[in-house]
Length: 196
Image (cartoon, rainbow, N blue to C red; front, side):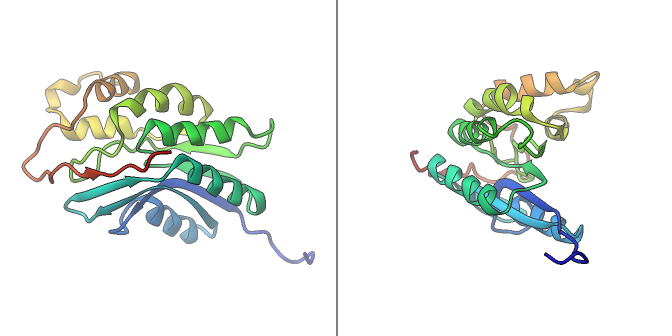
């Protein structure tokens, strides 16, 4: 590398694919590019969705998650990384296991965006995964986006939100298996998880 050549920072998004392009890995990669950062990705699931509804979700096999992480870290070690939609406990454990296996000082800054519910109201994180997210991934985070509170506020009457904090939002979401129906809510997505 020549002395006058500037190294472009690398960021990694570990998130779902949004076929509508407005969220997920697609949105993260656009944000990285706008900031002059080279974006890499590990896709945790495929969604068939648009701004109005989620038609279906298919989880990526945990082994494939592992292979994607190994490929990125093997040649394009990120300076920072962000998680988005992680969908299932198995996917979360695969991500956590890889990150915990990195040597001390080799783990990049991690931003956790706990994506749980789509704008349309469809649930994007299975109930069994909430505890894994809270107890295993969040302790590895350098920064946690307050998505849990935002999603809780979007689904509850204002009078129920007095004094709501992050811990209460997590607890509320972990106890619910489906979002509160709204007038614009789409049908529940068809989940076609691939065993792994």
